[in-house]
Image (cartoon, rainbow, N blue to C red; front, side):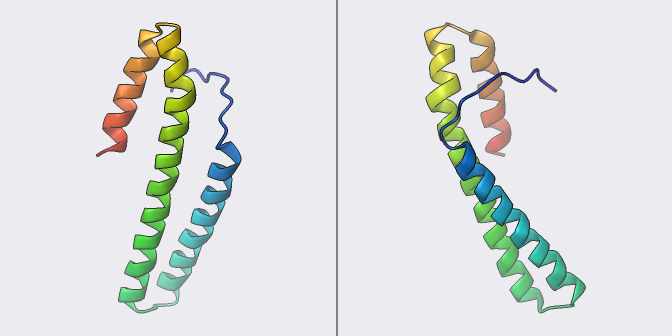
Length: 93
């Protein structure tokens, strides 16, 4: 794991709130499976959770570009840019 850098991200609270909601929805999906709910309903809920997680990733990506990447470009920090490129590759898989 990489060393953590201090970041000030404008969207941090928004991301935390969305993560909490996504966790709640995922717990609801787990409960649906335990209760043997209809598979179609479970799949629809899983799709909603997946979409929610994708949106969280998009918010983090934009926030990262607007803070860390801009800072890395301004300070010519090639390592940060390489890490960002690797993270983008993983995110898009």
